[in-house]
Image: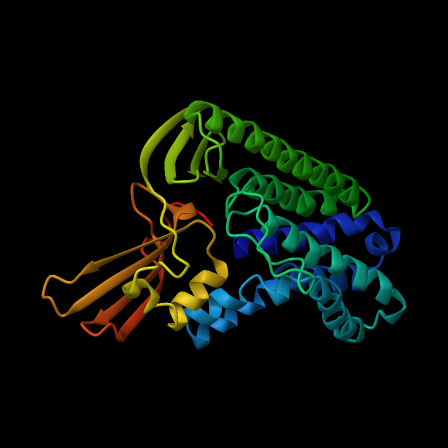
Length: 332
């Protein structure tokens, strides 16, 4: 999810920690846990530093090893040890570790439900897992936890920490119930899309900010079908032939782009792949476009890599990234 939401959940997890009597009664421990959960809730996304080496490096690394199974155990250790020393709460090190573990795990859990996905089972598997259930930013969850934070400030002044843990237990119960409802809704809509199109295949849904607005991509044996679902009504916006991009019969112009850094990074991440090429108007070469169809919007495929070739099919340049405004959908 977005950075603001992850940090907010880190704060509210510290509120949930008030279920422990020691946390509610000892300010030093409460501050230490808040620091741990706040850092832990964002720690997996420290991989964004890979952007300094270029976007291709970022695509390879983001939501990979920093979100992996070993990372779930190592981040809490790296964070809780210095925080325990800084606040002088060594006797509560286990509690610090476990609440930091909860923050890191909840971060990865939320990313798993996003369309972008996460390689959360590395090193056992490098496969991208994504449950296509939550937006990058979920207004309901952000509002729910923000309200809890404001109530925390108010209740602490009146009653101390005695009611904080119980309140956040309810908030997190509602959070998981909301995710479960959206997950069931997604499965129901996938069946509806396949029934409406009378096609079988792999169907991806992209949730919108509105509870009842979704985008879908259905890949059948020979075509891609792109459309929207509004209040349960399935509408097809576009369909086009599926292109096989790997194999001995691939077009030589397309094959010439496979060695570029941008295409290698793209193929590491993309799943519903469409590739096409065209000759430049000036006749001085070719342009090859690789796209991940999952992220279509308004008849455009905004995520992919453009490769420029000269007449002899030598690579001139390659550009990987998004061709959209940051505030435009899809929110992944």
